[in-house]
Length: 390
Image (cartoon, rainbow, N blue to C red; front, side):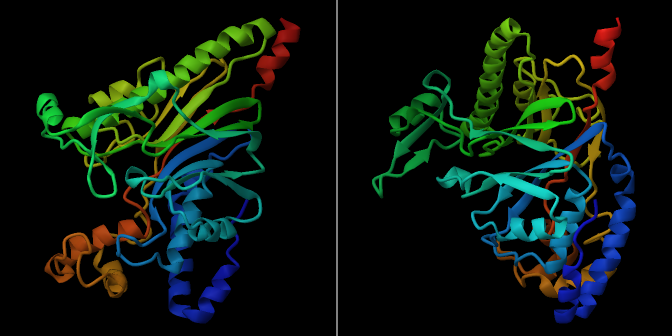
């Protein structure tokens, strides 16, 4: 598999210098990503999750992504066989541009845009290599039944009847006096479930972008409740399926949850919620196994698999800035002309600390989340044949 780089010729006609830089950086990326790409095999599946920051609306006013950035994003995606992508914009132009670079053997499945303030009009997508993965014709968004809805406190405002969440500092009694009432609701961003198969391995993959809200109080509690509701939903479904499948002699469905769970730390209640109900995080990526001291733990991959042949053989996190948008004077000098004069979030002038602002700005070119991945065994040929020999 090779990416479709023919677009670089058109890029060079409009900006020869930028196209040359892009090609040089792609070569360096391929060298840095070589160890991951070398793991590609017809016996395993490389699955990744990547929250690509605001892909690609420019609603935060940090400037649209540069042409070269799409080549870098596609280069990372192409290292894997299947990638769950969060924060895809309502306008699919950015995703479609990336798909053209990936080439014709790649395809995608995407959700509708999420309505409501909590969802930011985001979509979630699965991007996959059709030579390694096939869609099993089952897809849907997770809708909780009445008994499993998420409880939070809200009140309706007079203006347009909009619902407002209780502030974090509001205690239960104080919130009630202020007019906040308990409501039962669905996820802020509806989880997206798709059934896939690679080799012998059949599985349902659910990508999520869990509500963030705040790091304390009512909004943190809602974050935990969303994670709890998600794992309970799939545990209950798999347990029910297990009983049915035993009667028919077939294996129950295998579930893999991945995405931006906004997990605070390995010891935090957000992680405890994710690891409840029989879900586990593969040891290859659990805790700080693949994370540096300053890395966050938001992105996770958790599994609840009934297939005894299931095996994770490796995993890791991609260093997005090892070869592109580097933290050095050379790249700062190249890209500072593309940066806003002021920070759109707080109005501060970028010149006050141009190095720090550059490190912030580049996350809107690549992301503020690094891709997390695992390698899963998919060739069960020997296991199957031994049934006829033993």
